[in-house]
Length: 330
Image 1 (cartoon, rainbow, N blue to C red):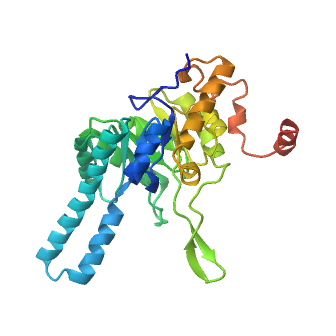
Image 2 (spheres, helix red, strand yellow):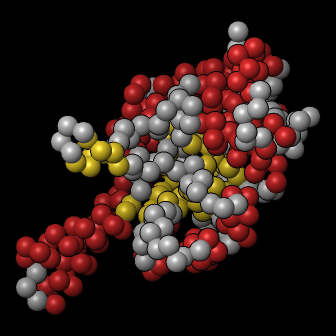
Image 3 (cartoon, rainbow, N blue to C red):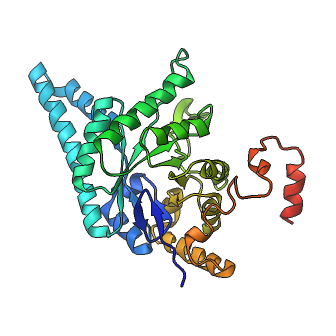
């Protein structure tokens, strides 16, 4: 009997393939379709403090004529936005029947904890912290930046009973040390890696325009390396691989590297929610062909600590790699 269930952040999931936080998971109809297709869990679109702040700023510019009215607008817009998010959590829990992981992005420490407590009260099964802002102050050093992350994690996890994961970028001096710090400050897992808005330049209009928001099919290789390394170094700490997963084989490779779950995003936009069923079916076929009964039978089998040549994950210069690749892929 093939069992595709996994344990992620202490949650029992029927599949390691989960829907990543995006606009796609802000829609209840799509959430239900993802659950029916076999998704293990849903990570809801992030609740952004920045967006709330922008809405307040707009209303302030057109209507607030006194400090009292501005205070009212701030409370109203914040309560309305958080209230809608709470409703989405409750509706998703009720209609999907699978674990619902909330996600937040804030810029003030009090909002991180305030939003997190409201989300826990709403019934979310876990919380993903979407922490990132572009370091623009050249006087700030890596220690200050990393300590800022750890402080947020520490403050949030002290207030919650539900498990917390942190979605991170790969822009850290020493990813291993940084993730170790996340665990030390209370996080139960990390998502590798976040993908951000990227500006481009239009030669036609001579203006700044958004770049393609979707990942490419080779981006998963970056998290493959770091998932393999970190999963061998950290104990009792779950890794979820995200970005560039367009086909089941990429997802299975990430499980072999040590990911407990694999997050799907761009592929959902391009192929729809029922592509998750294809991922699950191919996972079962792979397990059957290799004689694995449970995902835990092979999860991490090819991580940094379990292969004969761990230097394969350390190597960063090409040397004869191009020649090797040509031979192995003929």
